[in-house]
Image (cartoon, rainbow over all chains, first blue to last red; front, side):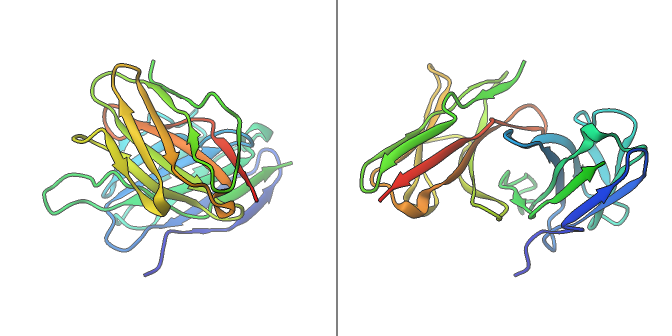
Length: 118
Length: 112
């Protein structure tokens, strides 16, 4: 079946602009994660959704970052007033919920969106 | 503070030899531990995980990892390396809630 998809694959913007990054999770996956990966580093947790609600947004670096998942499927990460330091690969992952009511914990990652802020 | 350490930036091994990629962690409570692999121009892929039970966990592509609670380690191993195993490997730990913390990654280079 189809995996996690992310659009655009590349985004170049100017400092101060607004950007939206989209994630389409695997169909039926209720858990969705956003990460940021800078060069030479591991993914850095940003936010976790269970269904439509953000269950943990403790990784969002500041109030310029915001994410939504209005229908419990597609998610959009929004960055206002972009800064050069926001340049990174933004990863999305989804995870199924087991019939027993718990997360399987295994995350399925998309290919990422490479954001470059000039 | 919760953290994951991968002490080696790169591991070099000859094809057919055993390989070990090291990972240590610091987390409150019982950890959920994971290994992911990232091939060039491809997304992160799940290899294996430890949640509970047997300390030796077997995963995809012949990889296994051993959970050692006293040493707070979760080293990735494979008995016989393949050139195609060359990739970037990430250890990760799930702390309280669903926040997953990743290590900085270890590049594995398998020479033919």
